[in-house]
Image (cartoon, rainbow, N blue to C red):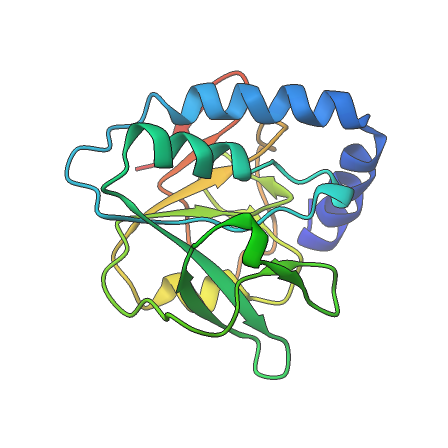
Length: 187
């Protein structure tokens, strides 16, 4: 399937989820996430969810990291839709987040993080058995991840498709993808 076909199909599947189903799947994703090794991890980058779009609730992941790995710095993005680039900021709590024009929660444009990031949780709509993903189509994460050495972790409510037909040379492969039922590893 092409990215455009998968994008439409995945958006429909997510919209069909009830709020309760999305909450249950998010909790199941967190249980899988807890199985990862966090020894030596100093910074984790997480996308902030658009809950109305039935995205995985990464606030659960933030709360768990703050409780279980308080020495790990949590980093969250701000998107610049004019340049299609992101800046990265230290997370200082939900109360300081504001919604941008696209209904995406973001931190204020201060306290930039410019250091290393050990793990990046990557948003996606679909992924294949090789570790390629389909996002919303703006390329924010491919540009961000293309220039760095980090562990790239996808989060998906649904399992993989066999093959994304139109992978581009600039598409960045995931290292692993977490679903509610299991963790897929790509070599």
